[in-house]
Length: 95
Image (cartoon, rainbow, N blue to C red; front, top):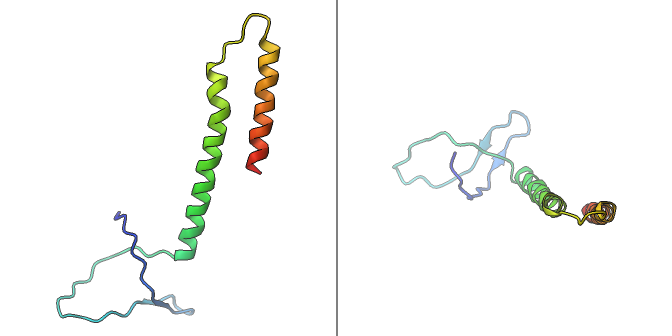
């Protein structure tokens, strides 16, 4: 699938869904099959994707220390409570 960012304004029939995007023909036309998406739907999907990427990065901030922290003997409870506070802070930043 092509990663083109061209947006072409056109008309869509509210009855049958036919789409037209008038252009001047220069006499060398050749039709090819393309995929068309609604620009508003694409913008909403990209916004949701950016939000999901932000959420994933935020959650990595919690998981990363959890994977690397090695509390000193007898300090497991303190480490757990610190990570729990950090998790609450990160989760509240997502809402």
